[in-house]
Image (tube, rainbow, N blue to C red; front, side):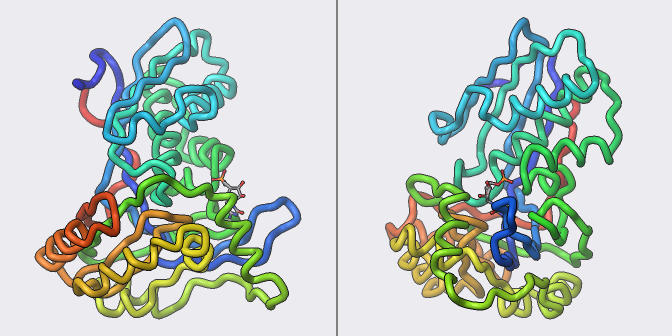
Length: 305
Ligand code: C5P
């Protein structure tokens, strides 16, 4: 479907967590993190046009899985911005052209929240500055500020306190979405259950990982990636073990669950290797698809009208 005419369109990338170190549960139910985000080139496009009411339409292979009500982060973003800036006619049609896997651990919902926020800010001329937008993003969800910023960043706190990271060159990835999503709170709960009775260290980004990003060396990055939520995601979805194994057997330098999963992420040596890993994963029958994408990618970006 073509983009609705006369609107503002924003393109927003997916993310993979090259390190996700998870601390003990906090009194507020969240977990302190050392969350090393890398934005990758799979994108949702969010187009907003004036409308009498707030309404959402979605296209794309996973469109039927996306909520069209006020629970959608794109709707919440529009409502929050309108309330903060006293927008007189906050009716808006939000159209999401969805390419990021839904409930897949790649921040697809967060991308739509950040995209709708930037698009509505432009449509309404609210003139919110970067700091205000990031503040609203943090209110929407832990991963939403990174969707706005993109590139690569270390997220502290619950993931919303960002420090940009230097990355040289590009890293070549393959992403294998699974059938059906995983609930992020359920994965964190399972992580707590699996670690019950053990001492959980303060989460810290590993210096080797940050150095690998700086030098752009995929072999060093592969040796340093880690995800504390992976055992929990595999415990809830045991079939992920076969997907990870299939990517490793196909020559991926590293295989890990993306965020809370169930999408699996594979780091490849170069573009040709990524294509080979993707073809082998598709043939393996252990996942529903395999997509290549590069990172870092730019954050939420207004597209020319
Ligand atoms: O911030 P967001 O709404 O995306 O978080 C969804 C859920 O994921 C939270 O309700 C919480 O259960 C879990 N979470 C967490 N610690 C974080 C981020 C998310 O426990 N740092």
